[in-house]
Amino acid sequence: MLSVRGGMVTLLLTDNRQRAGELLALDDSSFVILDGRRVVVALRPAVRRIDFGAFARIDIPVTGMTLRDRQNLTRRSRFPYGMSTEAMAALLKDAEQREPEVLRVSRP
Image 1 (tube, rainbow, N blue to C red):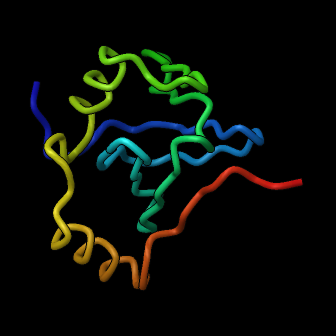
Image 2: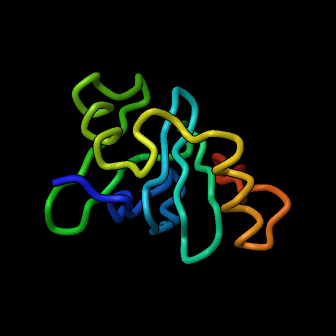
């Protein structure tokens, strides 16, 4: 079934913080979600696991995701072929953000 929305996910970060939202896109270095109206970019090293509610979860090893996991996530994203700069700009404008909020690995 196709949808104009991405799947709802919860990102569990390496420091045990969590962020939930619609999965917009992913690339080699990050995951992009829409948390309410806020655009959030989670850098890959900061993400330990991605949960899809009761349906599935994907653990993100330090060595990186498998091709199968990446394909699964890509299919569940709103922009499976990548998000254009125009789409990002429109989402940021709607959220009244200048730039996305970036989630990095926390430093003690």
